[in-house]
Amino acid sequence: MAAVPLSGLRARIAALEGRAPPSRAGAPSPARPGEARNRAESGAGDPARRFNAALLERLYPLDARPEGTVHDLTAAGHRDAGPLTGFAAALIARMGTAAGPVVWVADAVTAGETGGLYGPGLAAFGIDPARLLQVTARSASDALWAIEEALSVGGLAAIVGEIGGAPRALDLTATRRLALRAERCGTPVLLLRPAGPAIASAARLRFAVAPRPSGPDPHGLAVLGRPGFAVHLTRNRGGPTGAADVEFCPHDHRFRPRTSTDSQPVAAEAFDRPARPGPAEIVALRRVS
Image 1 (cartoon, rainbow, N blue to C red):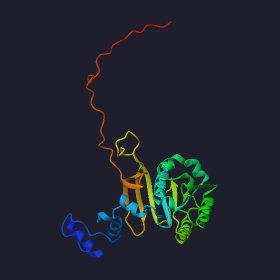
Image 2: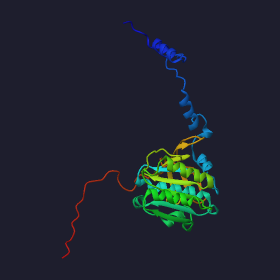
Image 3: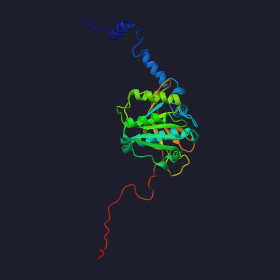
Image 4: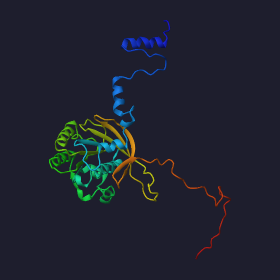
């Protein structure tokens, strides 16, 4: 069998597929329609459309309620429930005190795994604990029922539903029902799903949240820095997706790019003692009778 040059084989395959062959070896092949659409949605070619702290603030404007729909917030495991709750608290804090009270619903299993809300911690995020109404349901089905009932109450800033994992009750039909009621009354529903895998959902936005080390205090004080989050926007209907490391400032309720901790100062070299230890010295101690 005669050997066929690789370039000729590529040209034959291109002719069979009905596309133009590459002009030269190593030239990039034209993007497929699906790939072009994915690049457009992710904002890969437009810096203004990339997901970052500024885009996150546009999705959740200051002193206003975000879009009345289902917002899906997930974490890899129950151990990441802390940053997941913190990120939700940051979004609620941005709504402002005039937005109204918040109903926080959790099923009993998830509440036992992640623990309860800590009032001083919420206050540190700028949320008055008196604004929250907590509901602990016996099961995921009861939690979804409580969320739907809360959507019939007007004047709420948001409803948080903390349902871990992927229970059978939290399916596409349930999330679609929540989305329709949320859009009708204009109240956002924040679904917090620690240890929650990707499921079929009617959520318009989906975030995967993980912790990040805090940067230094901006005023140079020896205190804990701002809360840091690794936020991956995996679903955004009609907008870009992507990942970004952000910090939340509780004083002005703003998201900012996370300050890198790689260039922080380290301890200075020792100057009052030798760099290497000398020979050991044995010191006799007097026995105390």
